[in-house]
Length: 296
Image (cartoon, rainbow, N blue to C red; front, side):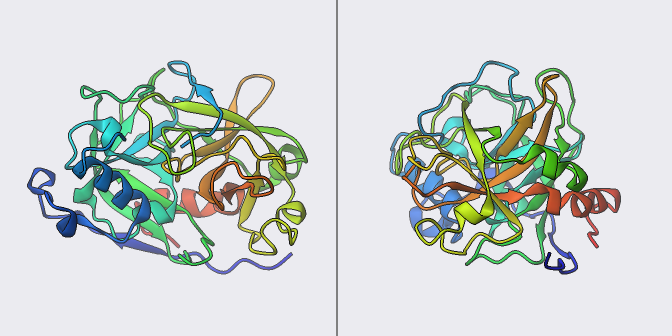
């Protein structure tokens, strides 16, 4: 197996601007972040606010799931642009590409929600930590952390999810093992995000299959995993980025196996969903948190 490079992190300090003083025109807000920009443009143009062929999640079914929300848009259902997972009271795990070119003043975290409503609680953040090795072109090392400005109150509605450990990966990530992905993203390719959290079950796909020349032709690295169906039809989609791909044991306990990262279109035949391989970054995440964002 190829040896992994040393992990570093880029830390973005707390933004000085007040989110309520945010942008009001299309030309003033764009951050060259596709997820963020798409959500903001829909809001500014008055359009309706991206799990495909899934079903609504039940309240409390995915208590680790959070929404990343554009701070200056008041309605959380319109402000949603990416997902994330609760690691502990202060930290959220998400995708690096979700935080591209953003500052802390531009986003909030919405924990403990199944339906995004105008009264949904939104929490400010104090720090964004992006993996130093993240490559925007290939989406390699697509992992990041968000530190909340104040500790999250944990309970039945909002609680952490364990990380898939490297020692358990071979046992859990086997061909056709069913994994669950959730999010408020579009329900059709190019469609609008939704207020109701959606879920879909998809089978694990070995990297060799995902890298076939009829699929991604070698673009899936050892830091990625795939899930989906060869015939398409069910997948994560735009707006689900950064959210969790989980495996549930027979006892109901869940582990975070992947982070929604990339894919060609949504639910296309042979174009599986590609996820950040969490087991590769479990030690990095723990070290970052233990050292208060000063990642190794």
